Length: 91
Image (cartoon, rainbow, N blue to C red):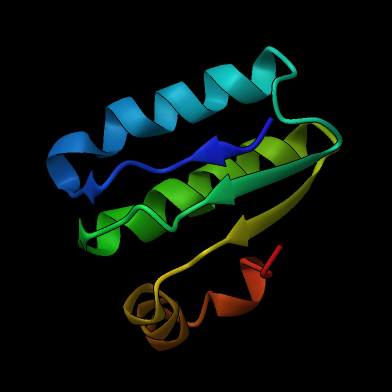
């Protein structure tokens, strides 16, 4: 099962989104590689990066691989600006 980010992911939605992703990973719904699909993102801020990094940390702590599919160009640029792009390999 591929995990998906919502269309809107700003500070207001970040905590709930991170908890939902962690829950799905904990339940084993992601398989051996956690792939988060970010293609639906339309409105987001740096909180989207925080959610992805939190998800990555959680996955790695559980011994799983992590990748991001469909990352919007603007989010990829933001990840580069913050120096975390290499932590979010493309799926």
